[in-house]
Length: 254
Ligand code: APR
Figure 1 (spheres, rainbow, N blue to C red):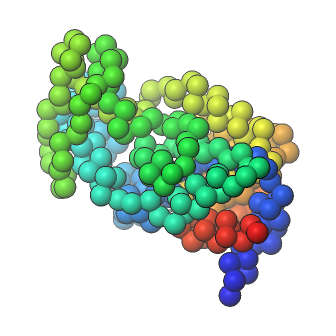
Figure 2: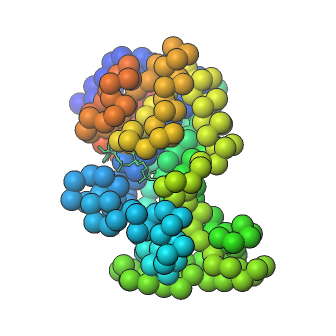
C-alpha cells in the first residue's frame, strides 16, 4: 500500500495545491514521542496531577517549590524524548521550495524545533524560557536533571532581583502572549490550508484560532485519532495519529 493510498483523497488534494499552510498543534502532536498529553484517559497529566496546584499563578504563590519540582520533571521528560516522524515530516514540508508553512503550537516543548522546523508561535509559552517571577528578567539557569517526580524543589533565584525563577509557560488564568496569538490568527487567515493536529480544543482562546480560518473560507483539516471539540467545525477529519498521518501526507505530496 503506497503512502497516498493511506491519505484521504480530499486532504491530499488540498495539501498538494496549498502553497501557504498553517499547522496548529497540541499535546497530541508530542504523544508518540512519549510526552504525555493533558486529558487523555489514564495517561493525561491532568488525570494524575491537579492543575489548580501546579499550573496557576495562585499555585505558584502558595508553593513555588512544588510547582518548580513538577516542571523540572516535565522538562526532563521532554529532554529524554525525541521528535517523531510527524515532527520531521512537518519540517520537511516547511523546507519544500515554494511552500510557506507556519507552525503555531500550544505545546511548551521544543520537539518541533529539534526536528528542524521553525515555529511561528508558542501560544502557551515555552518550558525552557525561564524568567524571574518578580522582575521578569530572563534567567540563565536550568532545571535540575530529575527523572522521577519529586514533591518539592526550591526554584533558583533571579540574578537581578533575587526573586524566584519560574517556567516560561502560560498558566491557567494568565493571558496569552499577545504577539504569539495575533501571529497565529494572521497565519490561519492568510493560509490556503490549515491543519489542526492533536488538540482537544478545550482551552481558549487558543481553541478559537481555527475559527478565524473558517471565517475566511480557508479549508481546515483535523488530524486526531479521537473526536475533539474542533471536530464539528472543520472541513475534513483524519482519525489517525500525527506520527503516522503527517509522514504519509508529506511523502504523498509528489
Ligand atoms: N496524534 C494526534 N492526536 C493525538 C494523539 C496522536 N498520537 N494522541 C492523542 N491525541 C489527541 C487526543 O485525542 C486529544 O484530542 O490529542 C488531544 C490532546 O488533548 P489535550 O490533552 O487536552 O491537549 P491540548 O489540547 O494540547 O491542551 C490544551 O491545555 O492543559 C492545557 O496549556 C495546556 O496547552 C495545553 C492546553
